[in-house]
Length: 472
Image (cartoon, rainbow, N blue to C red):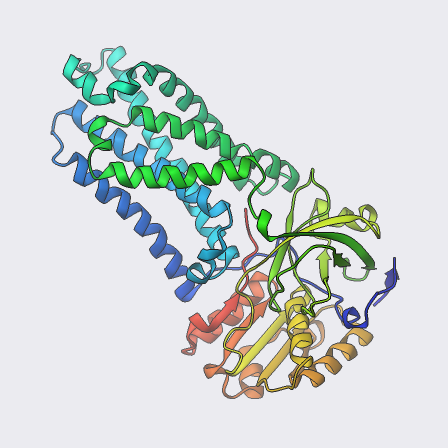
């Protein structure tokens, strides 16, 4: 491997950290983790639905009362889903054990955002379409009565109804634009980052819209306490976002201590020395790293074990517009902010039989795991498979040596020479693979193929662990 040294490594423990997980690495959810996220999402929808039914049922079979009930239902679902999404965006680490890690519940955040957009669109259509049809004379307009108007909104908010409706409509349009920008992967991350910061004030405008226009009969019934809780939690998270408080208690600042650019595989090793407190991390976890405030923080795997010396290593693959420019942008001594650690890719159940599979750039968390194991008496029962299309003798020798010190059996897979790693080969070399915990990090298609082959032979997919870094 041809390597250009920008600065010498400051500590020998980092010499092996040549490859890491890219920030944009994606993986599929599976097994119990996918079911758990679906359960949480469905529970939120069902809870809001139940509160609406307890408030609105029975619904008149006349068109306009039914339309009003549907308007309220879609409105509750939209703002309720958005509230839950905003709370998850604030990165509450308390949810990581329940949802399988921050990278996993960002997928739930995405589902909630899409669900909020769809129900908000249905809400807007339910409000606008019948009104327009009545104005055109296609249907009979509603009969307005003073009592109905009084019931539509509480007396305290009556004077605010027109402004709440107008502001809510414009906020809805902007919300849809922001959702499209968030989902459209061709939008550069820096533009996505800046645009997504607008989501918090847009949400607060929609909270105002909801509080004013939600009928008094809803506030005083079952829907009231639930929506008050969701709106309060979402508003707290939105203000935290607007004032830069998200993750602040988990941030540490420091400087870049050394850089090493490996041109053969477009990987940049960044060694960071932290000057403020870091809580420590487990091998395999990741952190949000900010080199440039205008670009924002990106998630990168921490590719070194924690030794309590304030030093972290990140290996950054040049895959996107931003990461490809980092070798020219970063310099030794440059300030850096690190937030974390996050994630549950931490080799839990260390006493059980384990199989580690690293594909190319995905070897990083396993190097950190080997370093952690090598620092104490080896007691693991682990096989490590490293699959690479760009073998480098020095790196492989160092990796093999580290695995030996850690008491881990090392297997090299060279797809261009011998084909991809297959379950048949793995089963020959690890006969008890069906009882093992499998930790995979690498290309999505590679991981999917291994997992599906294992599942087809009766393997419990809940024991197949795979990071999910697709946070858009």
